[in-house]
Length: 197
Image (cartoon, rainbow, N blue to C red; front, side, top):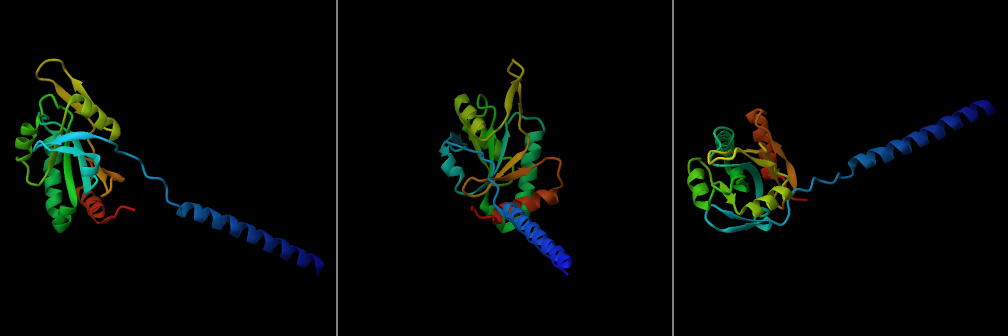
C-alpha cells in the first residue's frame, strides 16, 4: 500500500514538473521575437525634386526596390511585375507605396527617374541623391550595390529583392523574383492589411 502510494506520489510530482516545464516553454514561444531593424535617418530626393526622409517613407506601407534606369532586364521586369501585382490588389494598392531607389545617382537625376517611371503603370516613387546620400541609404536599408566597368557604359550590380515595410517602418519581409505571383500577391495583401504594432 505504501509502495503504491509512493509510486503514485512520484508519478504525480513528475507530471506536475513536466507540465510546468512545458508551460514555460510554450510561454517562451508566444513571446514576440524582435523584428529585424532596417532603416534609419536618410535624406534622398524624389522624381519631383522633393526631399524625402525616413519619416516620409514611414507614413505608409512600402515595397522598396533598388535599381537603376539603365538596367537592361531585372529592373524593368521587377517594376512591370509590381505594376501588375498592384493592379490586382484593388483598393489595397492605395495603402502601399512602391519605391525605386536608384543605385546609379550619377546618371539617374530626378528628371531621368520621372521619365523612366512614367513608362510603368502605377503611382511609383523614385529616389535619388548624391553618392554620399545613397551610401547612407544603402547602409540604413541594408542594400548592396557596386559599379561594374569603368567607361561610360558601366552597369550596376545590386540587391534584387523587393523589401516590404509596414506603415511605421517595421520590416515585414521580401518579394523574391523567383516566387510565384500568387505568393507575392498574398504577401502584398498581408502588408496592406497589417497594422504597425
